[in-house]
Amino acid sequence: MSQHAVNGASCRGKVLTLETINPRVKQVEYAVRGPISQRAMQLEKELKQGIKKPFTEVIRANIGDAHAMGQKPITFLRQVMALCSYPDLLEDDKFPEDAKKRAKRILDACGGRSIGAYSASQGIECIRQDVASYIEKRDFGISSNADNIYLSTGASDAIVTILKLLVSGEGHNRTGVMISIPQYPLYSAALAELAAVQINYYLDEDNCWSLDVNELRRALSEARQHCNPRVLCIINPGNPTGQVQSRQCIEDVIRFAKEEHLFLMADEVYQDNVYAKGCKFHSFKKVLFEMGPEYSDIVELASFHSTSKCYMGECGFRGGYMEVINMDPEVKAQLTKLVSVRLCSPVCGQALLDLVVNPPQPDEPSYTKFMKERMAVLSDLAVKANLTERIFNTVPGITCNPVQGAMYTFPRIALPQKAIDKAKEEGHAPDMYYCVRLLEEEGICLVPGSGFGQREGTFHFRMTILPPTEKLKVVLQKIGEFHLRFTEEFL
Image 1 (cartoon, rainbow, N blue to C red):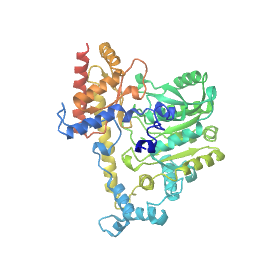
Image 2: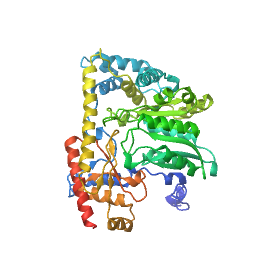
Image 3: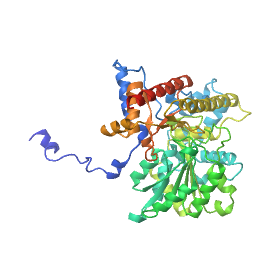
């Protein structure tokens, strides 16, 4: 008997094929790491092999990965992480005493005094207490209970976990989830995987991507014809659009959620990234409680934060938290059970999060350097936000709203009809065709707006503002030149 026959390969095919996998998985799309990103990786390999291209490097402006774009880690954060990872360094005089003190406190809370040990499923208790204190300080004294804090693998994992609790029903009773368009593709991907119904509400591009409650009402009313809307997701500051919501807007959204009996999810991972004059970050929780018991005793809210953005940019550590408000105690028990299935979030991410919510204080040796580095990152981002808007708006056919916050811009591009026809001929969305051409000709990797959603007949791309300032100027100039060349080709 042949070896093939012994292994059974000659008499049966694969157990797992495209026809037999979970059909929901095939519906999942994640544009940020989609085909353009994969082609960028291939081009990088080809450049290393010496294959000639019209450019000497691939610039990845497609993903909000600060350190990959050259941002330097904050010294204090890495000092404490080094001490936690290799406690023998606690004997080293090169490390400041406040860094050692933080590391010892974190290690004391770990099993066997090692960040290699599992933690409690909800997260290390003293870190959850520090998160609660941070929220109280941020929200000017509004109480936060550590028991309502869940530490997570970045914000993404917590967002998906809450959606798992919310999605139920069949047919017309299937849970509908309201998400902004443009949106961060985590949401559409998670909803596809969970077979929830995606309800699109459109941000107002002509009014700096603002959110209008009348548009929420329109979307909700239409959705009720075919599903059971139960959830409203908000991203503030916005990704990919970079807008910062006014306090009035947040109040309107909270009233709407209460009136329509919706669970609120507030994605606030860019809360330190606010640049525009007159703009200020207001947490949904703070506004909710300032509106009084009529709202704060009733509206169910989950809010999310992460170590991946703001001034830290520590994406790889996968640290984050969520705070749940007004959750039914029996449901909360189910949430705790659900997170326990995955044992715990990465303990190194939990440790890093602790340093973000409990940074050096004015009387500690690391304070001055920490504040200087923090301010340098945020000031630099503010300069780049302004620069991006200004330069794009000098290019005929590109319209860019002010980058009020976060770390992205979502400019609108005017494409000639011949370019749109050519894209369709090649099986691409028009802005995908544009981004493919830009990558192949200039080595600049962007994400087409169609990966985030956009109004019919409009075209955009998302770009991070993270490259170093001098490189960003080159990127903006190259995109401008490409746009003029591309447009001319198809006139």
